[in-house]
Image (tube, rainbow over all chains, first blue to last red; front, top):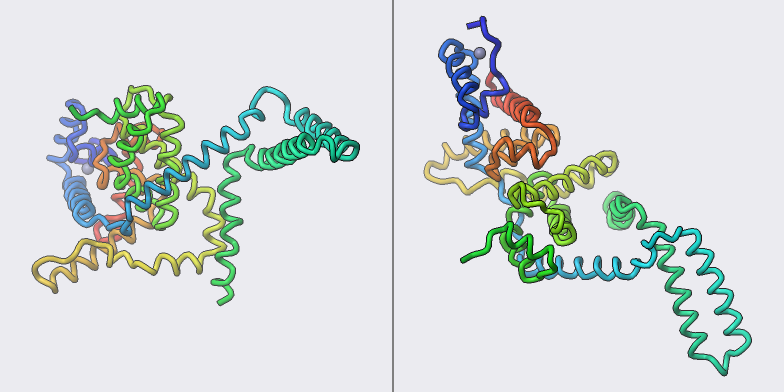
Length: 166
Length: 189
Ligand SMILES: [Zn+2]
């Protein structure tokens, strides 16, 4: 032994029968001469068997409820994606904001000058403007999707604070 | 007669909802178990495994069919979990006490399979297993993910490499380091 380096990182692949013939023979030859690697191999094998036979059980899940929740999430995601599809067009967001601002002014004018005559139209414009502003606001936050997780953390602050106090 | 995972995924790409439901049914337990093994938090495991299915639904079209569906899906799931852990590491430190409360709700020993024959011998074995899994907890995220993919999901080194987006040589190093640590924990040399 000692003449060849210990094939440390090949040992696990060796016991799992994943090595190509050349590597497999090299490791086998090394093992025949190296007690240290043979001991390590036996220990690794035992540990892997122990782990496989004692996999911790995850908490119980009601799969019907799990799938229902998943469907809801998927639906919510789809609606959201559909809702701000127009914002994804290659129009700069700033330009959209200006357009939305102009719409708001127009909407206000309509509302101020012809409240009784064109009530429905004004209401419609108002709704459109309001929803677009809301979308813009959402978009600014959602723009970086990874922020969702941070938002999630912020949301959980409420859940955590009482526990920390108490 | 039964459609393969890969064929179902193709259908999902074409907007076939029943195909998606079938895939979810096939993978829900494995996905949840793997997420829970990595995260060790019931709520996060539920959330992130569901997120993986949502990503699957949204990006089924990008499944090229070169890898097995399971490998592709595990890649989505494991990366979600590892990213989540990476992002929340600082946060975990801050809320450390609250979290450990959560985790102590269900000590690891209780989650190990029920003891069999000789109660005394089993008690000893239970303690060793508990020690072993506690040591698994202490491994780096990458090492732990590689190990879990091997012992729990039965993936081969090449598949683990695809899931973890690294080379097979790197996976071997992860596994070797993980097992060396565990061996040392159990009093080996
Ligand atoms: Zn050796």
